[in-house]
Image 1 (cartoon, rainbow, N blue to C red):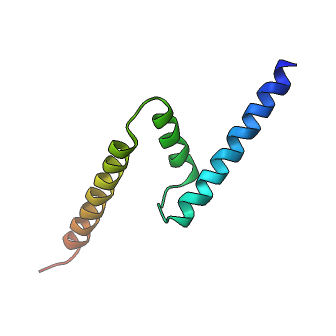
Image 2: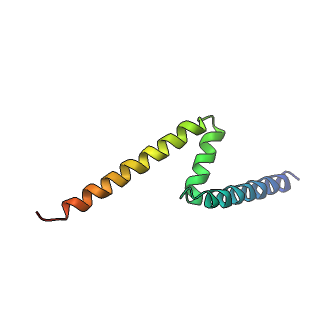
Image 3: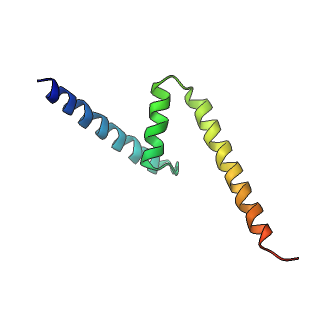
Amino acid sequence: MSSNKDADRITAAQQTLDTLFDISQLLNTQLDKETLATCVGMIESGVNPEALAAVIQELRRESAGLGATDTRRDVVP
């Protein structure tokens, strides 16, 4: 009987993640399913969602800045 409950919980969790992923796509968050699942897990563990969002935004800004720096290195003056 326990395995049925576990299977039901797993199915419900997957459906919830699928729904959250659909919402994130509509909001154009650019998060893949794995990253979204990691973020959900962190929030469920007590991480402040606003702080997590701020960190993600900062990492994206830094990543974009590094990309621009790499592009400039390829140009010969």
